[in-house]
Image 1: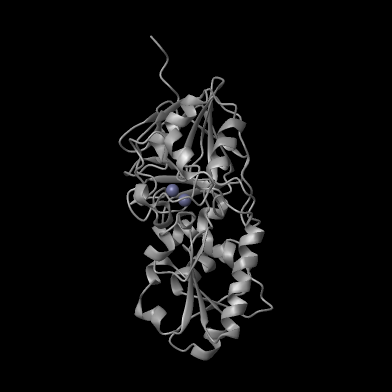
Image 2: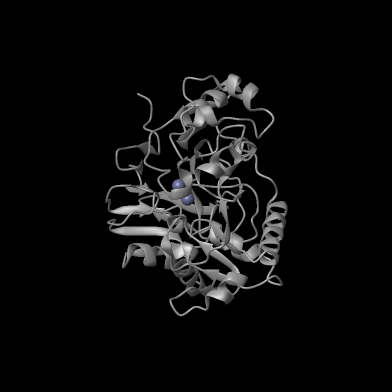
Length: 364
Ligand SMILES: [Zn+2]
Ligand SMILES: [Zn+2]
């Protein structure tokens, strides 16, 4: 009888029966190892949590008083004879890949990751393994990211231009990850950074954790509107179209998301500018990351799992699609169903090359 795999996919999450723990479970369990603090990976209700120490304050802020043990990258914790070690995932501050080892069998759970070093969180580190469990949020060839230096040069120019035209500047990105990347890459010689409360709460949690961020000012009812309009306003997706945002009119509104790579996405978000900024790996990043593990098998948890699994199989990987509840956080979900199923990836590769081609019909 074949040996039971070290990790298995259950209706509560990824489970290690031997070590008696789950990784990013979505139902309450006794022992949870958490890749990062985004809502679709870190649920409330577990008896014990293990995460990277830079996730500590954001987890407390989001989940309340939980029983949390934190570790550094590379530090091994034994769970019932099974080794558990965290490695940088490069996704957001405190994000980790989880390596699980028992009797020479090595599994790595990526959580969410990106391969470009964003200068804000610890950069992604490929970890050798036999079995790699990967996301593929942007597992389509149309998703190719520009180096972030270029993107932030565009953003700073746009801010300067707005200032010269008496327009306020509002930039939208989710509160853990995108917001800190933006804050650390703005040109502060242009003006000051103002934040929506949701963004500032996360910044404060990170600062309590010892993370050094550029100065930001929380927007309150007492804020001087004229001063705020001269700076740059960072807001979460939930603020789009709200009375809170309309107070700063006239403004130019920029949306930061990997989905902005698709024509029409900017219009659907009613944004003036779309910045293709993501905390997930792009198409090439996914393939290079999977390849770098040297894995025998790869399991795809969320994103374009069906077509990406087919593609990986075609190029010689032992690839499997698995069903999880990951991908529920704001920026991970396509504006509408990311369903390209039923269309061969070859067809898509032909149709969408070069990047920037029109996938709109397929995405909608
Ligand atoms: Zn995430
Ligand atoms: Zn996620």
